[in-house]
Amino acid sequence: MKGRIPYPALLWLTGKRACVVGGGCVALHRAEALLEAGAQVNVVAPDAVDGIVDLVVEGRLKWYKESFSTSMLRGMSIVVCATDDPDVNRRAAWAAKSMGALVNMAAPPLELSDFAVPASVRRGDLVFAVSTGGACPELSRRLRGELDALGDIYAPWLERLVPVREEIKERLASSEERRAFWREALSEDVMALVRDGKLDEAEEQVRHAVDRSRAES
Image (tube, rainbow, N blue to C red; front, side, top):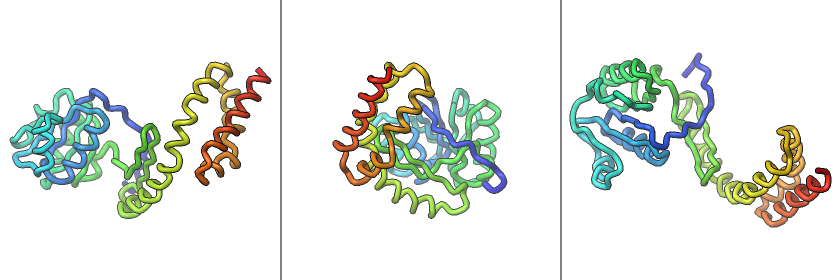
């Protein structure tokens, strides 16, 4: 939003309770994303699109087939307001805030959002996210397409770095030593090899850096 400076963050929602107020396509997309993040999701709406009904049949979420009431938000960590009625969205947002929940406005009035849902690309533990703060959502979607290609490049590389990181954590005691190691290990030459798909050669270079750290420790 114009005039508001966002704080970039990733939320870990496994086991957290979330409520989506609304039963349309936008509500479905928000519900699916929350489920993917491990949240326990309730949907509140008199009617719902087929996708939401399918998730209910699969036992993945609960659908309360009725109009919104504030009591439905008790115990929620996240509330998404996604109805086509701004007054209902406003009431749900203020009720959620009063109960300590974070609010995402997927429909007007958007200025009541506590957080935005950026366009994102996920490849295992690697997540890219981009947002224009609502100024141009289509640009976010376009950039997401470019990030999608980067995910295919860097996700396999991240998998190879995980065991190296564990080894370095045990070998080098201070955070400054570890930062110095990674600055050397992930040099531009190594990253160029990764971008060219030469992961074996890139990993060999990182392993050389590990060997040097052994000699110096």
